[in-house]
Image 1 (cartoon, rainbow, N blue to C red):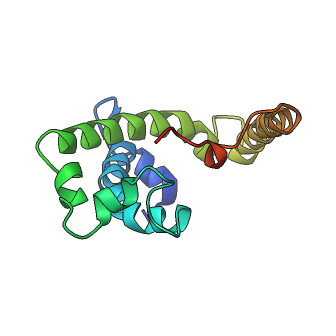
Image 2 (image 1 turned 180 degrees about the horizontal axis):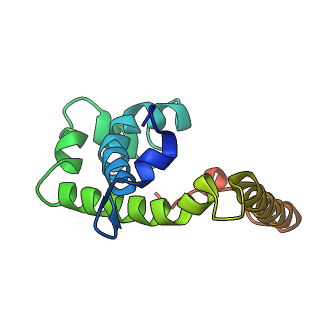
Length: 143
């Protein structure tokens, strides 16, 4: 990829099906669960999984290894399939933004997408500030 950049990766295909996006999607989907212990400790520094005991139940002493729960014969194919499909959709969706289209350089397409995402996020967050909706971390589940 370093030799040809994104253009070289976009040519990796099995017929009409892209290969680079699905492959990257599978890698990310299978690697993401490895970040769960550190992510839980950052989100809930005191442990306890936000009051529902999830962190201690999954990562505490004497618990079944969370890796056994995630990497088994049921969830492993699910993770890989989800990663492959999302990677393929992202590959197809982002290819014109990253490489451009004939007659339209990629900076124009990427700038338009960046502007649309920025406007959308502004609308979402400004609406969230004006309405009385509690933040997800402030929600207390019944014990």
